[in-house]
Image 1 (cartoon, each protein chain N blue to C red):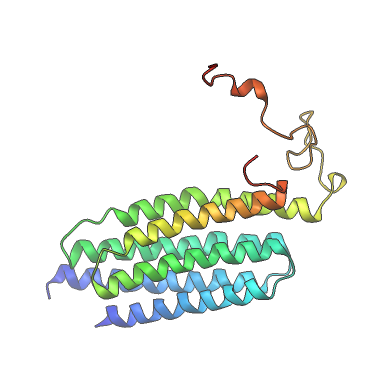
Image 2 (cartoon, rainbow over the protein chains, first blue to last red):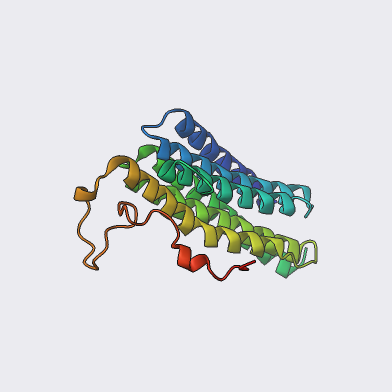
Length: 90
Length: 135
């Protein structure tokens, strides 16, 4: 089955991307790099959840992916807002 | 296995490989590019394209092999494509706030400063809030 090999390849790619983002979270020249790496980690994790849903043939994971997308967006914006203004909700 | 499933399998496999390569390129660009604004460019575009093709592959997979239309992927794609530019703008503004001053950016030519550096843009104009219930 070519689909299983493609799924394995995609798992490998997104996992590799996640590892590189994790390295960037720990070793970064500035704090905005860390925020950007965390945001990219959220995107990669959403892809991994969707791929896991394809592997297990279950649609139950999509709610988790959607919630992850929302919390990732809100946390990134809150972090940037904190750097810009020193406060999140003024 | 019917012909439609055969074709769908190749399409899904192609989309998965395409998306995986793009995700690796985006995350590698985050490590490799020399300046912060360039590093901002790499993952916001490439990783969104990667997750987009993974979601489309999942949609085709559940439509063809499970026989049900799954709208969640479309919702996730829509949400990600709506929020990615906002996130990138916020990170760019935070980076400008940290590294640049008002003299480093070119003039706007419209009478006001860049919003990140204009001291007059400190909070929401109170007259804009008057449509609330006066009590």
